[in-house]
Image 1 (cartoon, helix red, strand yellow):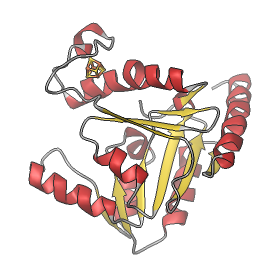
Image 2 (cartoon, protein in one colour; image 1 turned 45 degrees about the horizontal axis):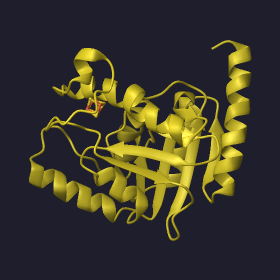
Image 3 (cartoon, helix red, strand yellow; image 1 turned 90 degrees about the horizontal axis):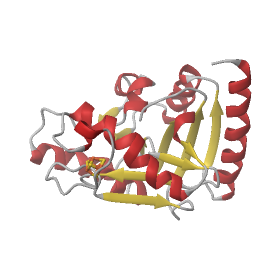
Length: 211
Ligand code: SF4
């Protein structure tokens, strides 16, 4: 990225981080994936129970491998039966740390997520003791209205393609607000302020990451 764009993102991050802090979340800014991954690994430490939602951003940071080397990691896999997934998601609810990436972070410090099943939205609101979120600059939006558009038009469509879903957006390239049985846009969670008994750490990273 050229230096001017980097500077613009830095200014946007500083405004967003200040707003997140005002809303009770811990906020951190990293220059790149490596720096952010190092901070997250050091925050988690060793010997912890760590849950994770399906997250391209976390995979791009290399965190599943790094975390599972010294901790117990709960994350569902495509090969799991529905019963195995349910057990994994219930283990996530009682984890020391839960890692995910929001579909959008608003510049006034709100966090927005969309799910098909709702396991991730559930864990983000209550259960795990400490939530760790990572977001690249592509996730920053100016308002909740923009976030609601972004999560379907920008995030859900490539995610549908990645997951091999037969939803209409994979053919048209735009959200058709479908009624498909495979629809992945069923539950939206907007976290406006830090939930009372859950710690929240949000890592903003000056790279394009995830969807
Ligand atoms: S078409 Fe359906 S699955 Fe695709 S983005 Fe819209 S609501 Fe989500």
